Image 1: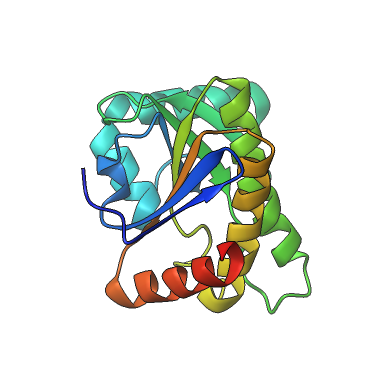
Image 2: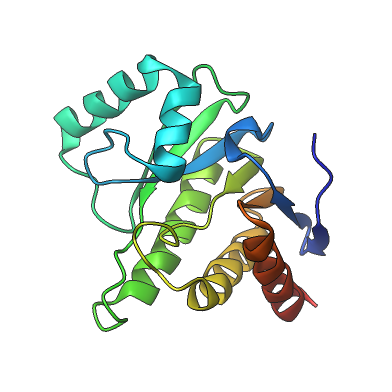
Length: 185
């Protein structure tokens, strides 16, 4: 396992920040920044689908067939199949349109609903990507405090024992570390 860049106690749980490949996380669950059709795509979503294997797509398509497209801010869970993580929690982040379409609230909902779903499925450790910060265009500097406050609340409410955040690039890692120090210290 990779060494975390930052770690801190939050309530009875812990927050850890990593740079690396989310698909290699050995947490109980990883979070997929999915699209509403759950059909895979680019970025984190595509990487998770490739690493998990074709069974993940089949499971996602079954969910969509049963309940329709996943609304922004909501979350569903599937097995992890070929991933080290036992589960994948899929959530649809908001597309950034300038902040006037409830994007901050919807982003917070993504994190809250993932943590709630984790607790409902006895997931003790969960790893997140920077939801909506890629092709969906959510500004990282605005997303960081929203994400970290939601994770902080979930840890304080004992929804999970550990929450991990995975940053892809060194610049992103620096921004997340500064945000974590601001929120948690």
